[in-house]
Image (tube, rainbow, N blue to C red; front, top):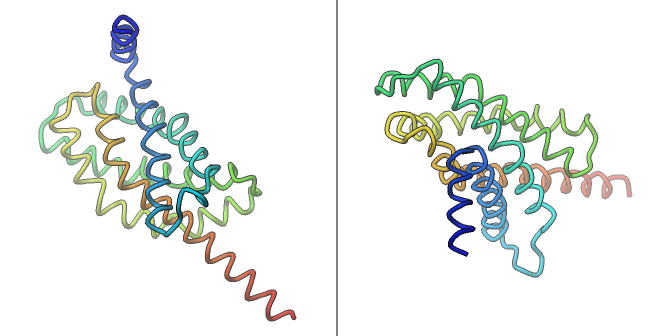
Length: 192
């Protein structure tokens, strides 16, 4: 067992994106469960498909794209001064942040089996309010991350911070579902 673990550790050291994929593939579904628990669900009525979708999306999409962004930003600004860390964090919020949120809402909606039109509506409805919260959260996290964390550990550090962020994303995603269900129910009542 020790040999397997040491080989796995060596593999993830050579391929840090895998470390991020494992982190995101674990933390994102965990945050979905936390959000569901906070909203009053219990083990008997968790939405396990939502948990699965969060794991799939976090591990297979978010981690690799974040890894790519961190690699690009490190090449563009190789110095790890406070000034360049702040620049990276601001540029991230103006470029990667909105793109990542649009992909999240679009992708998660499609993973639910909904239409492209529904996915576009989801992005139009939620992108700006979610991004506004992200602008208050991520620049601080990323400034510290870019300044003090070695590059090979940046994705796992961000994934740990993403636990809180992803709870918020799960809330935002669920919030609209509840509102749509309420509107549908209201429409049915008005038609009767």
